[in-house]
Image (cartoon, rainbow, N blue to C red):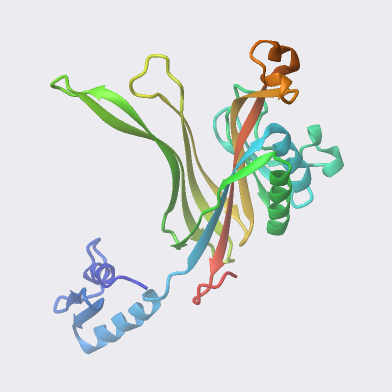
Length: 308
């Protein structure tokens, strides 16, 4: 419901448009969130009719986010399967703007490269964001669980938050590292620096029960430094606005990193010998691309906080 202080400012007309007459006064009891109004009888009736329309319960939205780390092969598999649910999507152009794109114009079997949802370039140097829509929430859960069972993806976080209409909800998850520094007197000191993955969502409910979401996504990661001291941080950030149906999922991808893997295979017992053991074991090194995927699903809540 509305705050009495906000309604009082509206009645006083700080912007030049007030509802009180020259004889009218209004005060606020903040303890009970109550307005005390004194004015002519006719004006008080007009004010009451206005307050009845303004002092209504604010609709709420539940924001569910899934943050998934997927290997390159997993993101491709997800793209193929999501084509059954939707062909609408957006892609970031050279000017940094998101433009509508039919990501599967000829049907699932004719999608370029087998991808029905474009989750960003597979080139290591390209870390731009792209996103698409997904309407089947059950399908999403099944696909993610299947990929996790195969070791191709990992859901690192699945937070949920409820926020009021046009109020910003913030979700943060980060890593903090300590480093040595020197203060003004030359004494050693320990400081901390944080790299975080943050998601800010501001929903706006439309008259037809769809949801406009202002999204700000920031992904920081520590970069190894050979010189010590304060650790450098690499940052990727996106700010965009999307329009989705109630319960529809927006998926954002395109943050790619390269993971260096080292696997050792050896013959039991013989591979552990100090010198001859090298003959019975070998080390396989490989580089694999890992993509960060963010799934955002808004759902409207009724007055009883039940998901619609």
